[in-house]
Image (cartoon, rainbow, N blue to C red):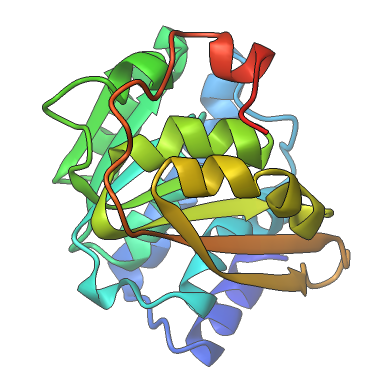
Length: 238
């Protein structure tokens, strides 16, 4: 998917980008490739792949969820900024917080935000388990997103504690999403969430399966969650 095809598909979906926003995606791509020579950010370096599998894939969340009423988003384990930075470019009003455990990636994001002239963005070098215990951030976000970070039972424990009541946790997954959700039912319920929907579709051109899982926060998360770093992954709630 080349840049023009990307912009055309977004336009068809009702997301109109101006010249500055289009330029921001171009700068994003070039920064990603340059920094990738120094630190491992992505296995994808061809422009068409980055636009399809990173930029387009990130923005698909907006095809199924209305971001106009969302103010604050926390992106857990965003890596090189996916999905939150492409969403921020498309919807500049969003207040983006990214938490990632690798300091070098946070360095990349800080420079990227400067080069893209982004405001209302904050990047934290931390483990999601610790971040979710921080009273400044716990249950404070309208939305928490995660893209291909961990299986749903683990991801729910990392993300739902950060979602405010009546907020939403949006998990972006590949194939077998329904199977993951079935295995995570206990965790989702225990942590105060309720499954609303699973949107499954295929990426254009390459036809690989994607799913967006929409979970609403209906109750406060019990104080004991998330557990200490590493435990959710070693001993998932299931």
